[in-house]
Amino acid sequence: QEQLVESGGGLVQAGGSLRLSCVASGTIFSIYLMGWYRQVPGKQRELIARITSGGTTYYADSVKGRFTISRDNAKNTVYLQMNSLKPEDTAVYYCNKVRLPQWGWGQGTQVTVSS
Image 1 (tube, rainbow, N blue to C red):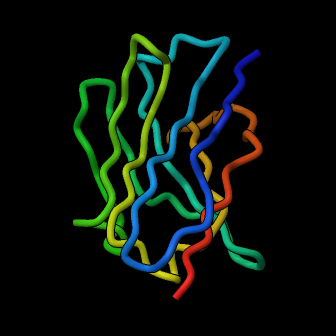
Image 2 (image 1 turned 135 degrees about the horizontal axis):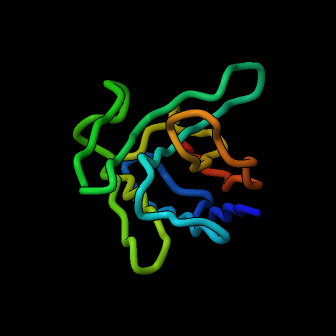
């Protein structure tokens, strides 16, 4: 049974930085296209960054130039370095496979950016 555990969120002032981590267990992590998603109350979860098994990355326009996704396949971990944070980045952040079928969602990690 695959399991995803996100961590690293918190409260930060606008302009600050956070680094999120997501550890996957119970799966062959390295072969999958992985993504970071975020969700605010009342809105759909959105994909903001993804990374191939080989390290090719893609970013949504809303985070391009500020966020960096990376992965350590030996540690079954995907990271999201978030710089120049804005209040509109406030959300619960999740990781998961990008392609279907996705694994069960973890609990996410809350990021709150104060102005």
